[in-house]
Length: 232
Image (cartoon, rainbow, N blue to C red; front, side, top):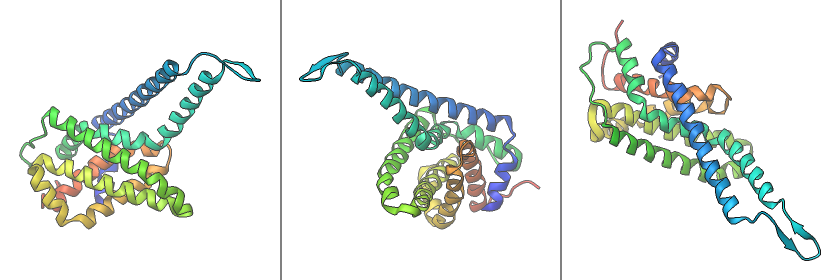
């Protein structure tokens, strides 16, 4: 498992890897900016520019306060949600990462059967929904767990990253049912690999690389569990 990660890390300089990192971050920033734009628009639509309160007089700063507050909220959430969102977008670009891994380490394999774009988009949206909802619900556990909050964070994201990335990597070769069957047989190893991916999520800047490293690591893990031999 550690060997799978080290192989992925050793290929990080690959231009196909770097391209996916850049696109994942740009798409994530675009989504967060779009969400803020919608939120700011709703505030401007529903909150009047000014109104009058008894004994206070005219109040004209509420909409500005809410707009700045929503900006600070989105900046805070972006720190928390950037990696899950980037992970979902990286799922759309998994073929590029997996293809680069296989071209370098498994050149003798037959061509894979990647998902059609429509299915890939649907799968990535499903992954995005699952990982966002799970992390938002886990916020309650983070508060209740006190000093153990990082462990809860790693466990939640380790499970999600392991399950989803392994499934996406395996589906290229085995289809949906075959991938799910292999994942169930090796659930412990997949969860442990997910924890390995989740640990750097709390490190700024480093966590931006997690989606691509995860996709590459789980491509290696799939081939190892599937019995495919790596080249020299």
